[in-house]
Amino acid sequence: MNKNLTAENYSRSMEQFLLLLRGEVDSLSRQYQSDTLSLEDLDHYLLAVNSFYYRSFQEKFWPGYQKEISEQVNDLLNLKLQESQLSKYIAAVIKRHAHLFNQVKALSNELRGLKQEISDHILSLQDEIDRQVLELIYSLKELGNRLRELDSFMQELNELLKELQSWPSSQYSQFMVMAARSLDNSKDMNYSNRYYQMLKQQQQIRGLLDKSQQDDSLLLERIQRLRKQLLDCFPTDGGPLDRFYQVQVQSRALHFTELIILHIQLENSTRVQELLQEFADFFAAWVKMLDLLLTHGRNPALIQLPELYELNLSQPGYMEELYYDLASAFASMDSLEQEIDKSPQADFNYLSQQLQNLLQLSAPLYLAMAQESSCHQMDQLTGRLQGINGSWEVLDSRMRIIAEEYGHSAELIKYDEKLISFLDGQLELLDNIQHDLERLLAPRNLTRIWKDFDIRVTHIPLTPGEVLPPPYLYLLDKYHILARITEEADNTILEAQGDIFLIRVEDESCEEIPYFIVGQKG
Image 1 (cartoon, helix red, strand yellow):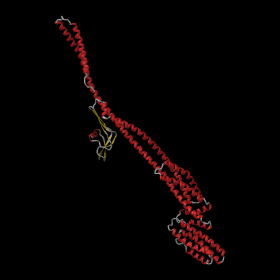
Image 2 (image 1 turned 90 degrees about the vertical axis):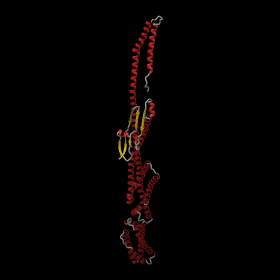
Image 3 (image 1 turned 60 degrees about the vertical axis):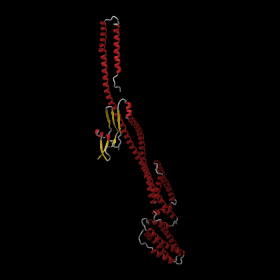
Image 4 (image 1 turned 90 degrees about the horizontal axis):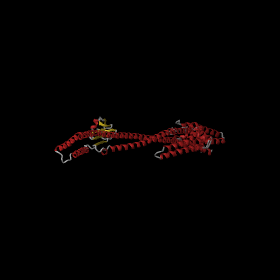
């Protein structure tokens, strides 16, 4: 800024005054241009010139010159005042820009914090979706385990069925199967040894009976020995097997021996042979039953033996057809389980669709089988089928709930992702504004804008976790900055909504102090 008086104005005023004098002097000179001028005329001439000079200087030049000087001095004084006001104005403008910088920075930090919260929310929702996928997977596995249990039970039923299909359809076979209902050895830990010992004894009796049929020369002696062995095999521990043997086998076998001995004594050989055959059929059915019990004693399907026998007689192909249907449904479930086990991350929509397909195909089948099985008095099978039918219903209900939760979570994720995209755009805009303000507040750029002013701006970034530099600690007391007790070093920045700016323009100075908190050791 030009602070000097403008000499050109004063020179111009002087030149105008001198031109005026010259014109007056020339005019007077022309009046007194004569060689005959007397001294008196010359005195009049000089008096006129001097009078004009002094009159002109006093009346024209000096008032105007004095006025111009006064105006120039006033202008300079006003300019000095304006310059001081302009310094204050410039300092205020810089402070406003610094305040705007802090507002932009604080807003950016808030938006970044909001973005982080939304990102954390998305992660929580994604975790929830993973949980929902696991819910479906383990619902599938739970049902798969029940289906495997049913498949195992069906295989055991099939083993029993194959045994029963090899039996002759005699009245004694049917009697033994029906009478075996009273046998429940699933809790008897020593059943196999007891059955094995009895089976050996019964095989010896059966051997004597076979010899009696093949050779009747010693028939009476063999039947008497057979009777003695039946009596020697009397139950001792009172277990289910012994009670069954005593009531269902021993008493009937002894009755056969009594009848055979009676007809031997009556010499009724025909009736003796009939009784021997009946006795042999009865005992063969018993030994076969005993062998089956020993072989399948741990088979939980054994309790359904009578019903299975009756079902096989009334509907020979029913169990095979049922097993085929169950095996087909189980294969679909097992295939889906294996596919999921091979995939590290199952897709919810794909898994849900596959389970829905299984529900549509298998659930009605199991419902029909459970209803049909209840007509055959296969309690163990019916109970399992009804349990699995209930599991299908639970799976269907659970799938609906989980699908609704998944849809809600997926919608929230989409909404949150839109918010993050919007925040990214806003943050990019704010970052650009912040960079522009930072460049504007750089001392080099400020001096380019106001070239004739001495401007200094000190930018002190406030970064949480860092210590406030010692030269600026005086600001803490000056502006009553909040402090909190912390384990960090003294004067560590705990929270800040901007940076510190120290501003000086000529003789004017001010500070832009944002809200911030420092830590003090307790």
